[in-house]
Length: 193
Image (tube, rainbow, N blue to C red):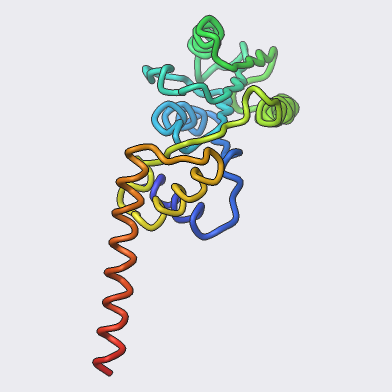
């Protein structure tokens, strides 16, 4: 799955996990809504561009900043649902910005570039402002099949918060058991040769 691939990338590369953005245009904008509302434990910002929020539960965004970009002249994906999503998020006190473009058709992708740059600047402001810096995120859904990755995240969480939750204690002990088992297997294999 996509989330398993992203977990692999996050594990293998130096990623600032407080700045993980999901963005896309058109169907990718629809995918942005999909992933952001279902994986707010992984993503820390979303910029859907010319994409419909569909019937996604906006409450699933769990406070991550969202900058929506859509054109009133979009002849493929209706403007109204994006505007309604922005209004609903704003009414709920969610960190949201909405850039409404004029005279930019759906396939005139160059017309979205300036708005995307502005959305990126806005997102950076959200991430760097004191009130919106994520202090702790649990990624149990992403790391469910990867206890070693879970333990790594719990270690990072512990360094930020100074404590572990009950769920993180369970993950930690499971990962330590797995590490012991892997060390034991390696010792047995070495003795056999």
